[in-house]
Image (cartoon, rainbow, N blue to C red; front, top):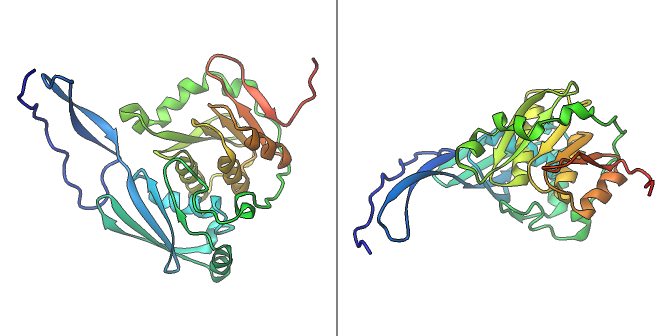
Length: 279
């Protein structure tokens, strides 16, 4: 075995948040050769509302303003974006802070919920203290037509243009929005699947993009917290590239949400609205 360690360029230091991806050295098991690969970065983002710490989330350091808006709505902390008065970011490197000023009514509701989250990139309900908080009462959607079948043709290939980070280094999820004419408008990426959806919802709200007739698309598995986020946002159709969980399906049907799974090698599966079996 060659005892000489391979040499690689060190990643550039960051004075604020790191870039979405950076290059890191790796070698083979015999340490005979080395190269560099781009890896997705993540940071710990501590979120405080009106000076009270609420959550620490591991996120990709991109589109953080979108994330704050989407997280606040998707978590039920605020009812609409106009309840956020100001957002200030601070910190550097892998430790960032977001101080969010929200309306008094929203802050009062938040304090009564007594939710103190320690978030991770994989779980959207960490720290919820009661079953009632995990399964909240949410409004039933008015219902919307299913999308045209041709809108979903070749979708897996088309979304690549909206996944620059994923194409570059992998290890991230994506959430995208398709408008009422079947056009992909924008996408957001993150190491956390629910974070990516939060960023998408925040971007839609901040850019004032109409949601009527539109579709949210997620590249990750579709579990309950993703259903809750699109319900709170008022998006009426959700397409998932991975299968939904049974509970996610039940909630979609109960709340009149169109839920479609797009398998890799077969036709789209409409799980909600439910249809009677002809077998």
